[in-house]
Image 1 (cartoon, rainbow, N blue to C red):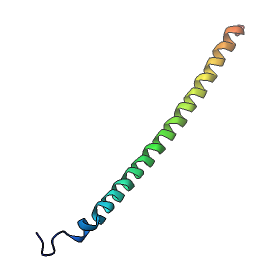
Image 2: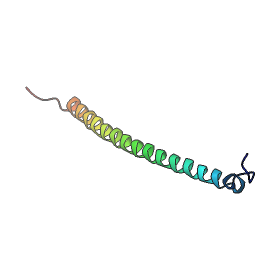
Image 3: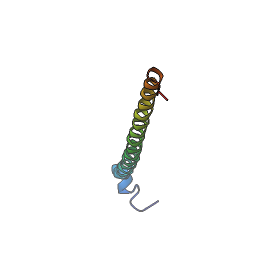
Length: 69
């Protein structure tokens, strides 16, 4: 044990507070990255949905108005 007893960082709780701040910062950065990935995936799904919907309307159109050969 050190001469003064409990280190100042542990006595005041500042070490725990700094560790908590570091953990929260890390969590927020990871959360931001995950949010950005989810937004990109949502746009990809939206684009695929639009393409499939257009294909569906083309199929319906061809069913009612078949091309004449």
